Image (cartoon, one colour):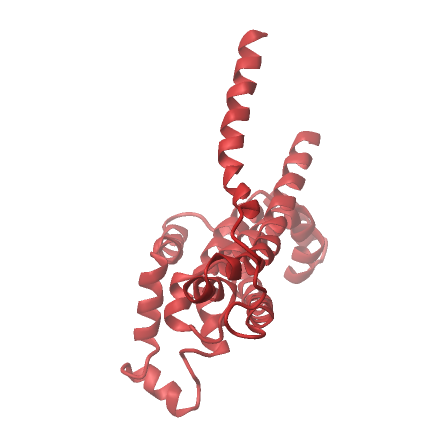
Length: 256
């Protein structure tokens, strides 16, 4: 009994130390400034981040889900090769990825020059912002979604197909209901990864400024009082989604 209480006490100390940075939200930094040095910058940054991150997540789902399903249903060297390629995007340092994206799609590259002639702006544009977020987040979505889809018994899908369902119906009526919580967790992981990206987006899409870049700009221009309002909004839009889905997953696991 004593060892149990000692373990709980040690875990409590660890948890308090882990969550202690949240105390910074109550630090006396002076009167908070809503917009920093530019009127309307906070609202604009929130709007850019939420809208373009939402678009990036839609692309992640539409493109990443079929890839994750393929990886979940195919074994052997074929899958290992594709997963190794996907891991490159996950393990790439964000700043390095941003620089490589700016070079690969920049006007100094033949492909980038061709896009520019077509009027496609590959830097400091909504397209550049969204594309960068897709690059930094889709690997996380695919890896987590593959694990969720692989947990669905293949025999159930095969029986559904034998009963006359086409592949889309099998996915909609069998695979998705069983994997939905894991897919939601994959979505939330990709959401946080994209929404919080700073290094790569700073290089490819300084404008339009999303929340991470605008927080940095406010910090440079006006200090902590200009950072705090946007920081609170940033935390409230990034943190709750994965937190809730993790709790739901734990609850379902406990009830299983």
